[in-house]
Length: 167
Image (cartoon, rainbow, N blue to C red; front, side, top):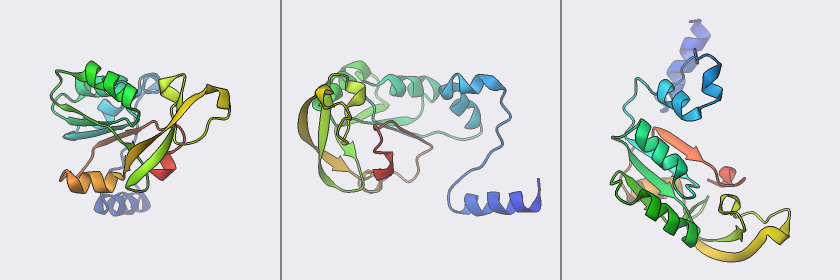
């Protein structure tokens, strides 16, 4: 490893980031969950945030990969959140959080569409897909961690329809 690479790696380590070379063959492009499992093979994964959890598809995969991790599923739309709760009922390590993740604590407007995977704080390009607009509670990840005494998150999955920059 070059001196520059070692210095960069140490600087990032000091601010909480781990940098690893990706020695994997092409299969990791096909299964991001297995790629994460491989990349985190030497880490103790205790906390996973599934932001934009929808009905828990990713959360249940993370539970299989990291059975000892506490998985927090953030889903703001009440109907979708109910389906998430139903799908994950009985999995004690999965906790549903019925709020949007944003850059502020308060309330945000959600555009609810005909496809739950496309619900967004941003208006749809095709407004005919929007079925309703609802106000939902919003939370920052920092505040959520403070409130719940979470010191570190090993996996952060976000699928929030273009609003990742606000989170």
